[in-house]
Amino acid sequence: MAEDVATLKERTSLEEVVREHVTLRRSGSSLLGLCPFHDEKTPSFNVNPTTNHYFCFGCQEGGDAISFVQKVEHLTFTEAVERLAQRIGMGMRHEDGGTRQRDDGGVGRRARLVEAHRVAQEFYADQLLTAQGARAGRDFMRERGFDSAAATLFGVGYAPRGGEDLVRHLRVKGFQDDELVAGGLAGRGSRGLYDRFRGRLVWPIRDITGDCVGFGARRLYDDDRIEAKYLNTSETAIYKKSTVLYGLDAAKKAIARDRSAVVVEGYTDVMACHLSGVETAIATCGTAFGVDHIKVLRRIMRDEADLAPSKVVFTFDGDAAGQKAAMRAFGEDQRWASQSFVAVARSGMDPCELRQAEGPDAVRALVEDAVPIFEFAVRTTIARYDLDTGEGRVGAAKAAATQIVQIRDESLQGRYWAAVAGWIGITPEEMLPFVREARAAKRHIRSPEPVHSDEPAEPSLEPTADELRDALPRPDLRDPVVLAERQLLQVVLQLPGLLEPADLDRLDGDSFSAPAHRSVWDAVVIAGRPGGSTAAWADAVVAAAPAAVQPLVAELAVAPLPVTPDRATGLPSRRYAASLVARLREVALGRQVADTLSQLRRLDNSPEPDLAATREVGLRLQALQRELADLRDKQEA
Image (cartoon, rainbow, N blue to C red):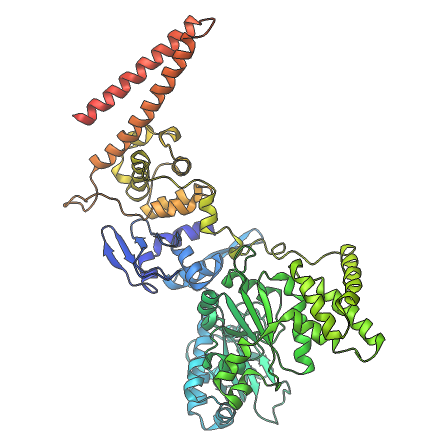
């Protein structure tokens, strides 16, 4: 796949990708705009079309088209690659058991299945708004407070009862029977294909990129042969219910901005929340909220222990099933660095019902008044005991203490067990022995996994740009020599054609005084001679650089050069590039002369002079001095 990724970068215009999210204007050899990754009033986001790299001098984010799409769309590396490949109509090869296979059909089988779902969603949506037989679906929506505009906004549709309506429509659009079955849109029976969903209200389930990959279908008719209230698309090549969250495509920007998410129980609850101003609402699709869902959200929210806590609010029905779901969420709480909360309306209504009965303000208040999930879990647990009896209070205290010691922040445990004692009706002193017993028991069993231990590959857990920069001191650009080093590295990355091979041969790591610049130069050496496009060359240097300086390489590949370009070529002159090499070479030679002179003085003052060594060092000093003088003469000429 590595070769395909390199080709993808070559064929992708970063400028075109960025312009879909940022308004850019020309500024010298770069393009300038407001950064999409942080709030700013003065543009500091730079795109260099030549190197195909971007860098923001405000938040220090930088990289290529893949990293930009990852960041702006909150995707994994693989998802971003597939997104860009689909954008330009390029097939990608995937490693699978040591063999390499290219998707059939140009843009690939996945793209065909996604396109079939897009056409199906449009068909269903049109049926809901226009078909006479869809009246039951329209009535259902009206009864829950949703008009046609809401249905259109969320893409809700209606599956006709006929049984083959969608199949016929998709065949006319050029899709093959095998594709309809593989995508879960149709089933295969003794008489041929039949629609997977019939006589039901359907919601399109989209992945994080916004592609429709499945449907959730709600029962409308009493004579529906399938009694299940909801049917969801079965697992397919493009739909994995354990990783898909309904509404995430619409909510991801708000989730990333606020570093919070509201997890509700159904499609109509997501709609009600968004229409009430709770833009971070999402829901699972026919399955419990699990580990893979947590991983997806953690990546978007940047749920990291060393950042300010993010926030996840779970809304559950007030019935037994809702309480059971909340306790499951509490069991997974150790997988988060975030703070988890539970919101349950006192009336027991879900967000959709609450919006109908009390309006949007009530939905927002429900989320704002959420209580810590620990408190909800403990109150739910102790409610099972008869607190009017001594035996009941002892049982409640033991059960609650087991939950108290699961709190990650031990400083909060003392505060909570004193409060729990009051809920049970005993004193804090009476509660303390149960807490001590629970702590002792916990030490003898395997503790819950640390927050990050089982998720080493999550992009959100990688070092931040600031952490990477802290690994090496930031070059001091007040030093004119360091400034010249920076400009030379900019030329090497952005305009390698201005330098002769002999120029590069005159430099080595010792030519750079700033450790970070020296590390970048080492990456240049490892990457080899510039070849192919400038963008490919910059990518090669980034790949060769250690993680600590990759952000600096990205910055150097984009930062404008402080020099007036030649009118004829629009580029800095070769003389300018050569002068930077000469400046660094002069400084390096001066340093070598000083070091050699110091060595000669030590030899001269040695108690036992070594004439041979003194002569050798003296000759080396003379050679360096002549080389330095020649270099200065050339510069003055």
